Image 1: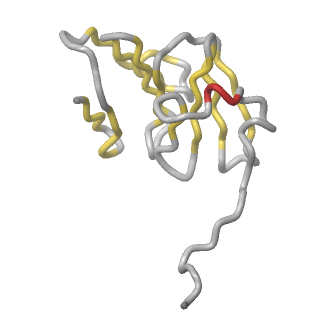
Image 2: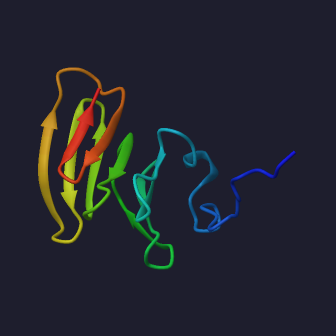
Length: 117
C-alpha cells in the first residue's frame, strides 16, 4: 500500500498562544486564508497573524463569530442578527447591518463579498 499523499505537521499551537481550548472549535475559530486565524473568546476576539510570526492581537469585542477578509485587514463580526465590518488598518467601522433573520452560515467569497445564509 502506498503512503498517504498528505504530510501533516504542526505549525503552531493556539493554546500555547493563549487561546482557550473552549474557543478552538467550529463556529468560534476561523481560517479564511493563509493570513489569519481568528478565535472568538467569551469577552474578546483573538487575531493570529500567520504572516507575522503568529503574532496575537486581542480586541475587547463581544461577538458570536468573526471572520477576516482573505485579502485585506477587514474583520467581520456577527452577534445575533447584527453584522459589523471593521478595517483594522484604519481602525474604522466600515459597515453595520441588522439582519431580519439569524445568520446560519457566512463566508467571504471574494475580497469584497461576504455571503450570508
